[in-house]
Amino acid sequence: MDMITPDTRLRLGWAEAAVFALEHCRLSHANAICAAWLEAAEIGGPRHDPFGMVYSDARFWALSAPQHELVAYTLAGLERLPSALLPLPMRKVAFKAIWRSFPDQERIAFLKHVKGGRA
Image 1 (cartoon, rainbow, N blue to C red):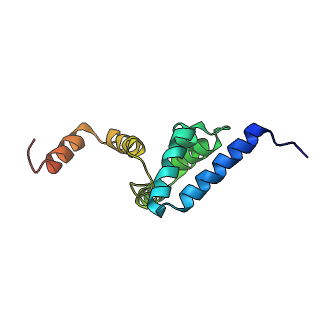
Image 2: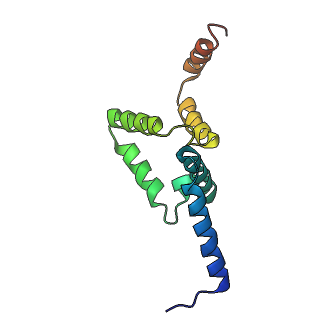
Image 3: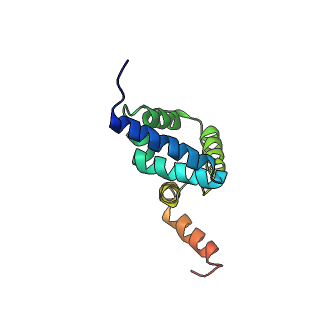
């Protein structure tokens, strides 16, 4: 049996305190705290998983999926992630990816639409 060092014992205490604190928060606050921590810890999400499998699997699926499935899963995923669980920087990444896919003419038309007809 491995001996628990004082440092390990201290870290285990901190982990227990963190769990206790999260259990006593509002669920929406605990979710936001955990999502923010995961975003910071993962440095960009699945693209940086240790073996690169999550992002590469997702990219492979997206490249081979029929259009209707790609749209359906993408929209379902976006709808499932309320803004409290998807921090602003991550929402910006998703928005930029969609925005870049539009031709310039469509971007101009969209901006005109959201500005109430003003160019």
